[in-house]
Length: 236
Image 1 (cartoon, one colour):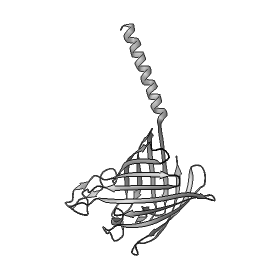
Image 2 (cartoon, helix red, strand yellow):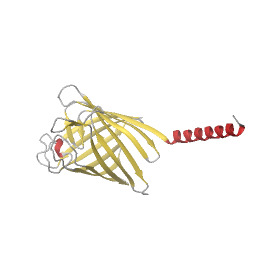
Image 3 (cartoon, helix red, strand yellow):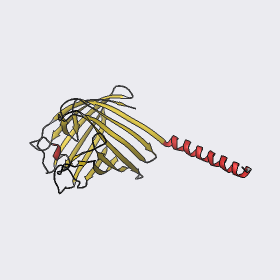
Image 4 (cartoon, helix red, strand yellow):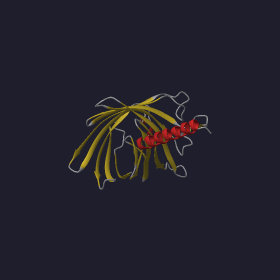
């Protein structure tokens, strides 16, 4: 092998090593585990009993990829694991923190449910955009019409959330007003009309990594139930 080729290979290897080190320095991993007294999603209870939620995420510059997961027991046999992968992209919008992304809902990474013909549906996906400025936040979620157990002629669905956060004393407080058609179908008596709720939460740090939270969901419609639940979270 000539000296020139040897030097070229060494230079390329050095460049690759530097690039890998730079990539490793920019790559960040994070996660959390939360034990909750009741699984409540967007203000609507999914089932009675304890559940374990968690998140595993990797972020590189402005792109984040992860999985949100939870134990689930709908009382229809053995418990399953909800596994919801997602991707988010942060946008350079100055003082307004902006991100867009996609969530995918599925169980055990294998299916979301079955359609009216009995065929498995791998997942249901949802597009979203979120904006935050100071203590206020606004999120919009859109679920395109997809095959489901509901209808052979699927309808698109939406969900909007307006939130505010503040610290008072040793507690972090938040209030989220949600409204739309996506959560209506998860009610004890499902319906297609838009509905909404107000979720109020208080969280207190016990250590740098451990915190406890208390939550209350108040239904806007008269036929909606109100819920109280608590959680213990560990972040890493």
